[in-house]
Length: 132
Image (cartoon, rainbow, N blue to C red; front, side, top):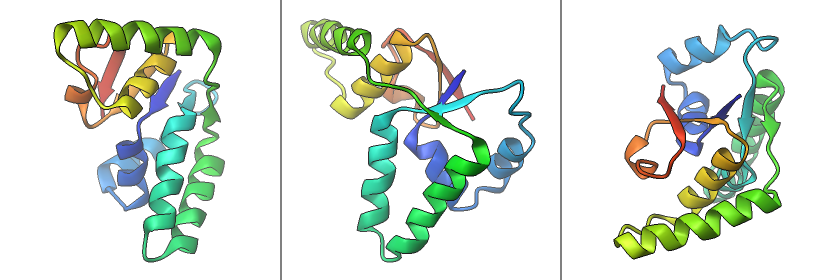
């Protein structure tokens, strides 16, 4: 299962033609897409900050319905992974944004592939990453 990061969804919603074409061609019977609750929170935050809130909210709803994206739960294992990775990064002097670490923890705990355009944010976090 592929878990989409916030920037991928935003680029899709703002009309990135190559990304839209790629996502439109996905066979959802064979290729599952998911979002973390953190990603969904970031999307809604952006929608409510935008100048056209209702249009942004409709875009999020449409994306969820069109892609059949599942929301992956932030479970106990993801919380454990977050704590462990936070301490490991702190010891190395490599703290990252906590939202990115939360997303990576959910992805790692569920053995998913994270799809992003900001690969450097997730380097060294022990997760599978694809750049679309």
